[in-house]
Length: 309
Image (cartoon, rainbow, N blue to C red; front, side, top):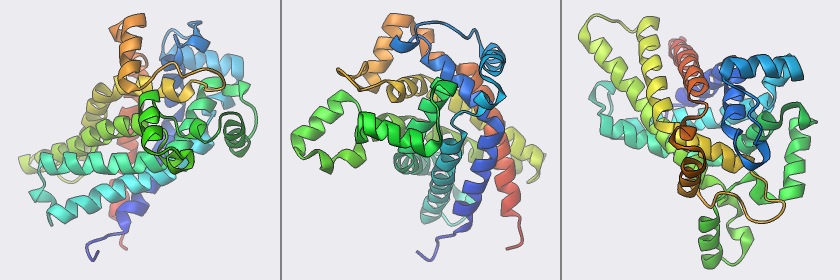
């Protein structure tokens, strides 16, 4: 524990909040585009990111572009803090110097930190997506919406889980209270494992090679190029899982069974019913969010690391 450094935890959370606030309207359009085609959202209301931004602002007001910002910031305060802090701490357990890091070590640390942080922050992610998808139709504060979901759908409404996993868990643990904390970990953790397992290693490796080339120093330009690269890589790798995860979190369980039994089932149903490219719905806003998000995050994070304390 002597190698544990508190700075990555604090700086990671602070930089995540700054990046989230700056790119949230883009994230909202991504969610709206991704839920189009789902049973309760059969009408195609948005033709693209910019059309969605314009229509939401016109019909629901500018404030609607920040629907769900409260749970989003709360999520980043927990998710970003744990993710970055755990990632950097795990790397130091394997190697003492950043120069000795390898892609394998970074990917492993990224996957572990992504799964852990996303699992703990899952309820705020569910709430954010619900508030984004319904906008002004879902009235009230973050706490009132949290209570509403809990009262109408129970604990599993806050921790979404696939039917096959739920059945297996109930078979092993008949008491539902024993497994409630694990509900919803599966799709969220899968997406986080991909995103964090790609983005953070790509950033570290890109930055290391740029510094070794001798043409770049540890400057904002280097941080910009590295963060842009990791944002593109993360968007390409995660978008299909992100589409299914968004739909699974947005589906209701008030009556009957859920539409998707799990992530794989969601991928197959979406591909079969809407075509392969439906898995890349919201890709441009996803990338245009991950790109600026990572740029803002890493530049902020790197500047915070330079503070003299």
